[in-house]
Length: 321
Image 1 (cartoon, rainbow, N blue to C red):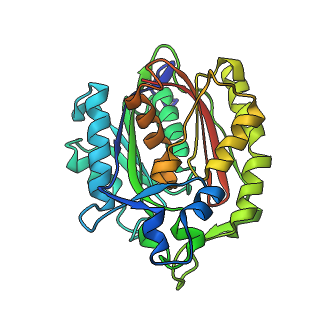
Image 2 (spheres, helix red, strand yellow):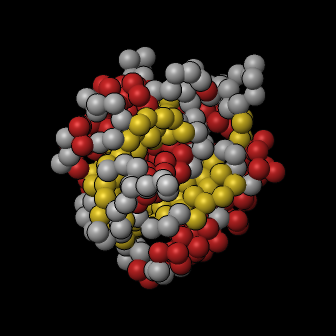
């Protein structure tokens, strides 16, 4: 007797996006009052003008629920139509329990498969692939993917090399079955020989980052990943309407844009300027901002790339909802 397997969908696509940005805006001038830095120094090196820091009541759970609720509303699905919840974060306070089940419960999603995933700043793209693969395999109908971070909890606020960069927020996507694929094959991997480039050492004051090493890695090693993602999806740079890489550093975004040969006709996400580096939340936050501003529109072919601690990376081509 053979084991029967479910029949999956031909493809999966994003049905709706949602975002939550903390209330508090922190400018470079404000940071200059508490550490040895200034607006010119920060903008020259990372391109950030301001970032959002969460207040005490803006917990990971609260931000994830807010973003997830908006994504559900945008998708047109009811909570009981979702049967998988994947939450990506690198800033959970406790290892157990995960907050994915809590977020699902708060949103009224009845007894879904739910778990947390930590792939650093690549977390959203990793989770998006897990959701897409689950739908295509037939183990889920619709999935909620959330990237959420409170990086201010894991940053030494006196360390200008990290405190000026990292920020808080949440972004979410509802993924559902589709006869026409709207999420392309993932191009992912890791460079574990550089695991210590971004880390939080037990007993330390917070996250540490070898900024120059990460910059060189991102600008020289990851272009091939973006090309692989496009080739796997059967498209080229000339077909891409929107480029939305992880919002780590504006200089990295501009370098990747130039290397891929994108011109003025391609919309490039630069959400890092006003949101800072929000790790696993940065890509859905950037996509939501582009759609809300009208710079990007439904149906646009979009290239995304998450990369960060591990070092991990994942790129995909997708269609905006």
